Image (cartoon, rainbow, N blue to C red; front, side, top):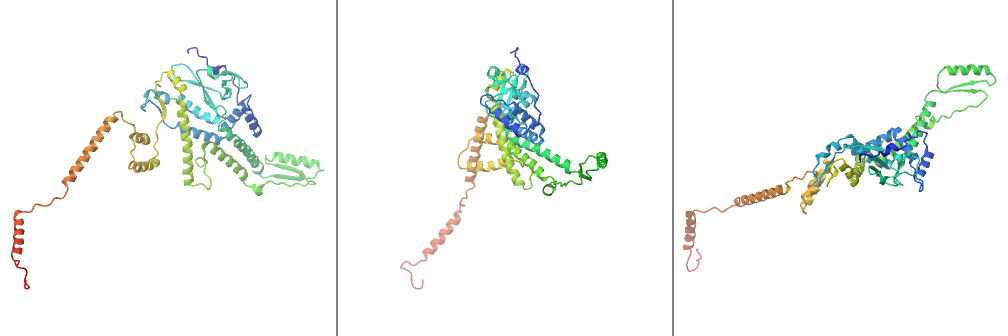
Length: 429
């Protein structure tokens, strides 16, 4: 381990190709990357690098999607879901933050490569993507090679990605190139028609006048100027009738931005607003973007919990046995209120376990749960018995009549029946 040979030190690196890119080169790069026998992503990754570093809108939405995950809190927990503080120094380091970023970027580029450096401190070097052949599972010493070192023979090299995945940037490449052409046309339109056009007519046979006029035009500014013989017919169609404000180029640029936003974020309204957008539409598209963020979080969490990476952390002295990385639960109050209403209704009909409430509402389960649960149940039973006792005491009771009152009533009844005739009632009675 002390004699580890860093593979990236043996690579022959080449600067990114910054030559002009167009749709024809994009198609050629795709064909090379999708080749069955000699696949190569070099041209495609040069194109990715060019558009991702120059196009401001594309760079912004890529960073926005990464930030949705990077800004979430992550922790390492044991099998009982209790946080292990020994990982705090790792999780809050810039190296670990960059590692998570590389995992997310594998969705954009199709692959990310990492080589861990043996030592006491957690450290790694990034493997250039153009030197990774996912199709052949190799690291190439030169980006133009077709064979190299098998990744299986490199115990400290970790590649994240799938074999035939060329990344989300492939979906954005065409729109980024069309957008670049649109900006070029827009700049040319402004250059030509943004200033008044100077047109001078001269006699085709008067060479001295022609030279004098040319000198005047050269010395009178840099706006568009034309010298036309009087004998020639000249007509300038500038397109101002249908595109007087450059709206045509602006619509092309906006449409290209919208398509790239949909490819990366799944929507457009969380980045830019349109004339037809409203609050309800923005809320609905925010929910769609939230689903993509949940998918990214699950992807990062599953990747970090791979056995291979946990073994790497173990080699740095971290206690990984039985533990795993987990993103901390974040409460959405609007959804939580709805969930409380649903759970209240359902719990009145069917029993629900306590673990469900701990997981749903993000409440930590205490270590002495059984003891507290037994005490809670005893208090509940005591409260029920107290309520039953109070209920019996509050029942209405018939008042006891005094003995004198009973006797008085008996005497009245006896007096009534004593005056009744013995041989039947008379007519006078």
